[in-house]
Amino acid sequence: MQIAVCDDEKEIRDMFEEKIRRICPKADLTLYKSGKELLLSEESPDIVLLDIQMPGKNGMETARELRRNNKKLIIIFVTALEDYVFEAFDVGAFHYLVKPFDDRKFEKVFMDAVAQLEERKELEAVNIKRKVPSLMITTGGKHITVNSEDIIYAEVFDRKIVLHTIYEDIEYYGKMKELEKKVGDGFYRSHRAYLVNFNFIKKYDATTIYLENGQALMAKQNYHEFVKCYLRYNQKKGNK
Image (cartoon, rainbow, N blue to C red; front, top):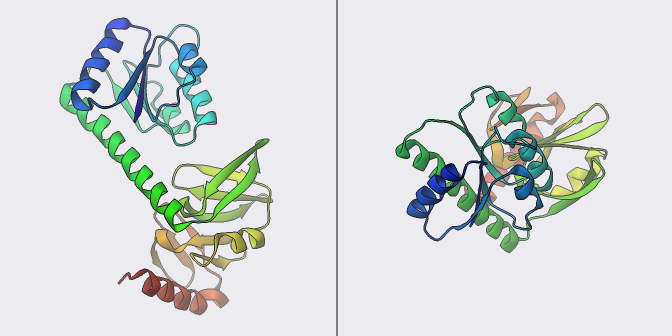
């Protein structure tokens, strides 16, 4: 597990080093004194603790660049300012810690981040073992790989497909029919504009499927077939 701390004040970096080594002594910890230094590093951290007020490239700008290169990075902002809390959501921050905070608060946030990281790695290992299908798509001029089991649902919007994943929303130009074939029988085309992952369904009725994050339309003519497929899928998975 690789941890990065980025703060322009040495005493703050040293303080976090002491806390992290006490909580998680086996972590591979690297300290950075600026956003530029962090961005130029060849290291690829799993978790980064990032100050916002820094000379040159501030923490929010640094986070945006980090996120572009690493969609799964866990970002924890640590700052004396509350002004950027809404911008933190835009870069998918895990938490926004406002100074001052006590050891108990820091330890809880940090260990929650570690738990999420470990859960994600376990899921990825299971997916590799099960050979879960992955998608290669082009978005924003980049080719990226998306694990199908990370997709909560997909929808057609403004002539694009939007993949709503557990990490982020990804838009790309494509055809829903092709996506439906690639992801397999763990998904169902409930409506011409919606494709849902059975694993994330919370409840449903004849018009709507309610998912863990969002909802999808149900075409009336598809309802009975959907129910059959969903029950068959749960039986296959051993769910009650």
